[in-house]
Image 1: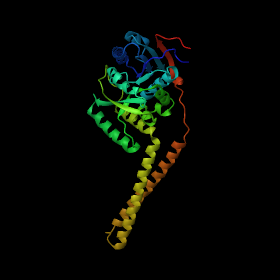
Image 2: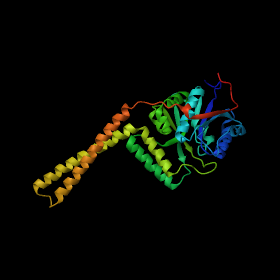
Image 3: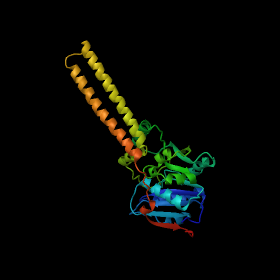
Image 4: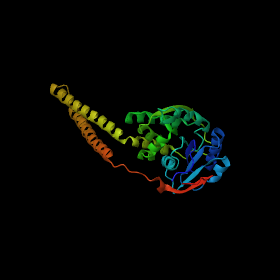
Length: 320
């Protein structure tokens, strides 16, 4: 059943144990965009600070709070929110995905959604002009972008802050990759994408719950979306190394026959090259087999309703 409401702008935001920051976000959204913005807040299994309707009422906004049965993680919470929008608000003119901690600035949303007026753009993603982060995070992010480019052949320079047209929401909601990594799913969706350089703000309150291990895991999940491409590239690299080891072995045999090899050098060099060939050859076969498994794997559909505990409506509307 679809809600009998067609908002011009829907904001999907995941919240986990962060009522103070999310409450301020709702107020800032009203201040920047007016009271007509519709909020889809996904409470990701919060126990100590669950989101309730009071924060939406205090901000003068309408929307829903989707409480999940358990903590599913940041990316899955966004996937559940987008699936809810695709089901209940399919005609929403614009949908914005943003974090609830204040680092995605509400006052930049108008600039973010502006390119969606063009008929040849489906998704607009925020590309950061400035960051408020530690040196370690910046160094890790540079290495990650280089590794991502090397293994997938694609550039990734954006996160979850994005604006989508209704057709783009429906497309992403139908993709299983959305449950793994939102930005990676947007890249692989074949949607027409534009970037919008925006500043990143400081957190409204509290500390980030994402530690270094969590960031690393999030980065590897982005690679998982392109598992087939990664496996093929790794297989090609291993095959090249294996061929070079064969060429090196032939060269070592040639030097031995010509009498240029010193005592003991030939056996050591040939042994090392043989080990390299066997290992890379085996790894090549394994990656090719895994590529076949990934390509032939059945597509599974995740039912987002299975994760939903309750849906609370602020200023609820009558459903058809």
